[in-house]
Image (cartoon, rainbow, N blue to C red):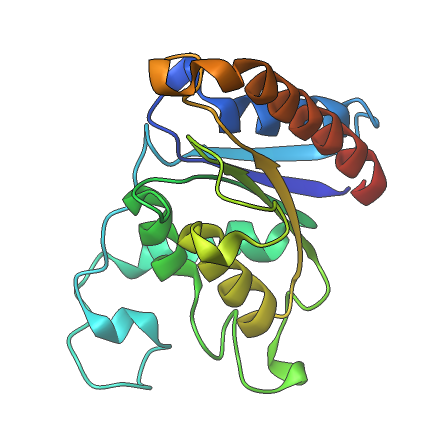
Length: 211
């Protein structure tokens, strides 16, 4: 039974463009058949706690530092959901040129060398699995295939999941999401609509391709 793990982190609720794209992906995934399972987490509504100790960035006994009682159960739950996923779908709205803090907290829970990440191919249980990063940006920041100039959140996640965990990143970008609300971007509203429509179409296509 193929499993999709979907993570949303936008604070914009029903107005969120990144949620619109992840919803389109999810709908196309679910339409592939009843055997296509979905696990969804809303990191804004139910934010992961920040790790209270740097020791929790590592397996037990690997690094000095206190491991507070009661914290590891939650961390194991996040890691278990990730390891069980055949496809990982992450909404990455650009907040101050980076990712939302709730998403970063989740990443801190699941990126554990020797568990999900490593330094050798044999240490990477997620090697080759797809991770779809849905980047939504309020303005336009250059070519969609070059996010590192501005979108440091998506770029960082490509390092975390691609280089460190061995997953295969796929990027979907919706730009100019603030154009409907800002007069300074009023002349680019048609461009914003086209960007969102293209992102939704790509999400549906990619869900079928990866499913």
